[in-house]
Amino acid sequence: MDFSPIIKARKALDSLWQEALLKGRCWGLAKRDNPYSATNITIAIGKELVSVSQGKDGKLRIHQFTRAKGTSLGRRVKRILRNNKLSFE
Image 1: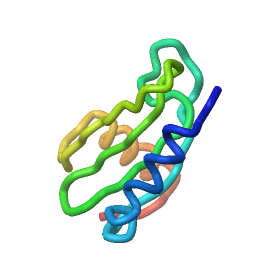
Image 2: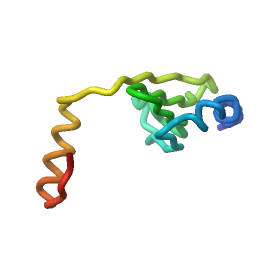
Image 3: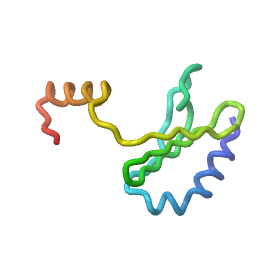
């Protein structure tokens, strides 16, 4: 797969990358129904998070999120941390 679009996107997003309080590159499992498959650029500023991934067709996909409380995934994380005797806020 040609990853040049996502590499160019990372360079183009450098000003936001420098501004972000949370940023990273991560990898999504290559599953047919995974919208985050392959390499991702993740940037969070304030209460918003954006992750950019590249599909098999080479097109960039932008996934947008806003901070939330009381989610089912958050409850699962808290339960796992508690079960492992880890404290959190």
